[in-house]
Amino acid sequence: MIRGILFDKDGTLIDFRRTWMPAYRGLALDLAARIDPEGGISRQEDLGASLLAHLGYDRAGDRFAPDSPLLWATNDDVAAALARLPALRGIDVPAIVSNHVSDAERYPPAPVGDLDSLFARLRSFGLQLGIATMDTTEAAQSLAARLGLVRHLAYIAGFDAGHGEKPAAGMVLGFCAATGLMPAEVVVVGDTRADLAMARAAGAQAAVAVLTGALPASALHPFADQVLDTIHDLEAWLIDTGRLASAAARR
Picture 1 (tube, rainbow, N blue to C red):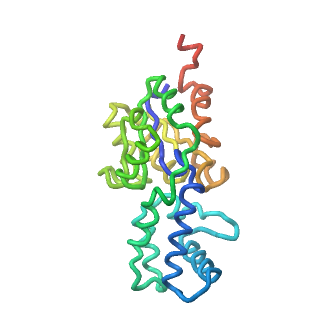
Picture 2: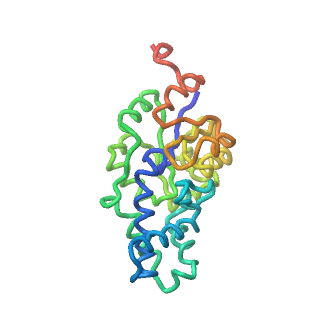
Picture 3: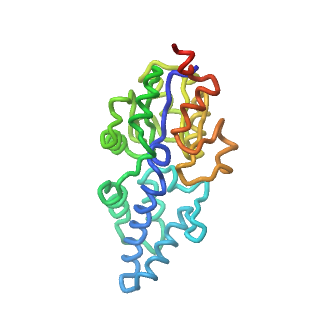
């Protein structure tokens, strides 16, 4: 039986492609326009695609390299990687990246279904719930408030919360410290290899992958105990595997 679930944010609670791809394309096009302000939109789109290619995104195939920093690294890391490109020398890349990725009105988060109802059901089992993200803690708290999830959460941590960064174990151990749980009582749910590696490093009971990020099941299966379509399949899987009691067993 488990007593806690620690969720990744981007690609797990919110759909990665619907939320982050518009922002990534927007910042790439913004940067491309500064590289070649006289180029037409087609030229600038090609330049933007080449910038994202440096970060592991293939526009033609609409796919990501499994280790693409766009999938799991901090926004500061993304900005730093872009800023190293010779074509962007002299451009304030961090400011432009921040302008796009922090704008939740221009790029509103797309939650994966009714998260409030899901979290309420999970809480009814007596579970402690948390969020661990490579975004900032403030951004995670803001998202939780926006989606009405704060009341369900015992822990919200970003890369700046003092627990270290994925794939190290710190965020899981921080969740355990905040809730009084042991890692072996916790399931970690995420959409990247970094999430799954974090679960392993911490000694979590299970590492569960979901397909609402950008990686296919084939890229996640070798690292996960289970790959689910979305987090809405999690409750049934936990019951089926004996990690939660069924409704009948709880009566």
